[in-house]
Image (cartoon, rainbow, N blue to C red; front, side, top):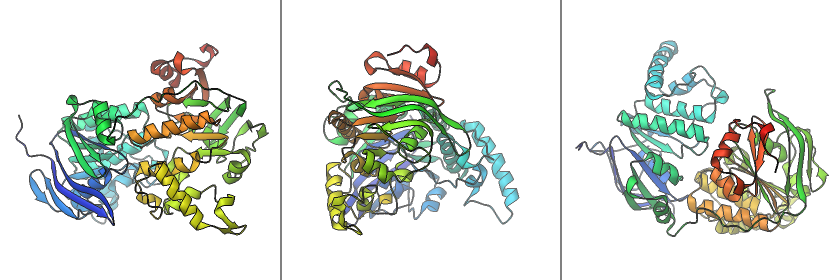
Length: 516
């Protein structure tokens, strides 16, 4: 048995933001050379705690020990000097810089850049080989997949000498294949003696990859467990404080008339690449059509066209009215004229204005509604704020502060703001992309119930998700996309994750798919 001191010890950490107590008397010990999970609901204080460890925040009270020695972490540079690196949920990369330039940025040695770049290139080649983190160092960030961008972030902290890595929701935007690759990398890092702290909402991942797990609830630590000695059900109950229903129960759908009809839709991206290739489908009132597929196979472009954010060719009708697909539209008109609501896949880029207050974000896209207007030229801000407080309460947005800017909420609570804004309009057609990305298990259950409730009230729902369990649980019909085409359609009760995975990877050909 090793007698090495713990990699990290936090003792009686307190942190408040005004009247909000984000961390209250938190203590945690992380063994050296282990993968330690931290789970909890959105707003439980996980990211705040790790931001204190990384020097983004200063604790109001408490002690930090690294490898048995008490330290003072003043800022992120100080944390890096103690061997602590952090990979954030939303990457901190300059998109038009190369991989090499991003990694060296902020740690250039001397005034002559060329020798530093050459030294860095050699060091990164060795790191890539050692940890399976191979990536083209001369590629620009904007041309890399999300999974490769994450590798760049991991390389960046390793290059700076980190042997304690904090990863905040690292799989939130990854495909299943990219997640498997990440876990292989993390195991290799652990085997080489690195210590990894993993913040995640996904209990299946906790069970698969961690050695120990700590559970937080409402700013407090409620338990520490050895992962082999616990279950997802026990962790979920500790997180939420009650039993959690993992599979939503729902009555069979009762579809009415067709709301969305798509015929021969084609979409070409800004680089001239055909992303959607002649697809046709329909969605009826009172049903959920789930679109399954590995990210990057045309689902995002499909949602963008139907949401009025991108042009396409073909015929799209909503309630027998044809949409103009010739270019990006003022989506507010589509919301009013066709009753379309849209929860976009990327909440930060497409769903929120991060510098604006929560109450302002709750009104975006609906700011011309009569109840928000004092007169044709003036909005009634007090009415918008009152409505925002109600929505934040009903959707359990934490903290329930309409004056907080969107950027200051956790990722999961940002998602709840978008979901609350769109769902409560009871739309004719709901377009929803990755509805539960980055939100905790209790909130997942809530959002799933809301989707089924809208279905039962007669909304037609087009659901795009990379989570097969989510698709199988919510969809009344499932269409699988691969390489811009619909490979086949299935009923949830007549398929499983294995068959859907084969369709998602193009192994089952479209022509061999039996009709439903």
